[in-house]
Length: 365
Image (cartoon, rainbow, N blue to C red; front, side, top):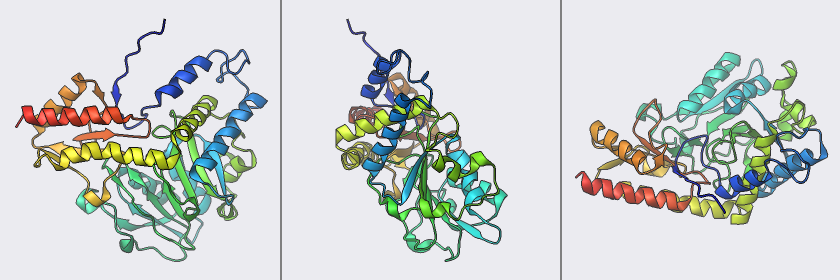
């Protein structure tokens, strides 16, 4: 008899929801993976069985994102936070400058790490308005000879998201896509490097995906520790040291799930529908709910808003928790409310939350 499993409405910002079908498959394969008599967590990362898992995950990511042959795919560790340092270590040479677009806390952290390692400056900033918007493309001020231009594609704390990206021509464009990778189609060829922690749209925490253009590797600094060189991991197919094998296995299964749904185009349409369910309630609430982000900068992944008073906000969050909605509190740095509707969050969860918002407003006018 199948056990009844209790599942909450998971709106956590990360680690976030995973597809139930992926969790169920992992449960079935946990003890004996493909007849090996071992869990995938117990397999040698040098074994042919694990290498098949590893290479299939790379192949699936290339297929779903239409990654051209000009780019390599890496599975690293250390999260986006380590990438904040690895990027300037590898690509910001003495005498060069790197430009950063400031759109929130994570771009601030990337900028701070870059400052420790070389000369960096702000190409544009939305801090003055408390990060309510994404700077317009014409606002970006960077130089032709810059080592790179760095941006954060989606801002989990403030709920803003880039809708289009600059054509930087000869300046390498680097993007932290931790919170919206695979949520919509993008032109990978426009980017020299993309990095993303897996724990929002790709799988469990512990894996960092890096998509890097091959010609950028030719410009990398060689006088840095071996483990911090991208070339080390390219040469060894991300198997220089023991990788997070279970996380990569789960990432591969999430990619299979996206393929079965119809690919990135299908998931993009679904994400728009999910976000609209909640934004419509905010927009039609007569300022009972007030969205943080400007409408043309709104994120489909992280929907941020406040209520009329702090007291009402506390009541709202308390009742949301009682109703089984988890992770709705805003980030500790700014407060408020946040719904993270990543790929694996089902549309039924967003529908249920929008109905809860409507009922709460009616009861607390």
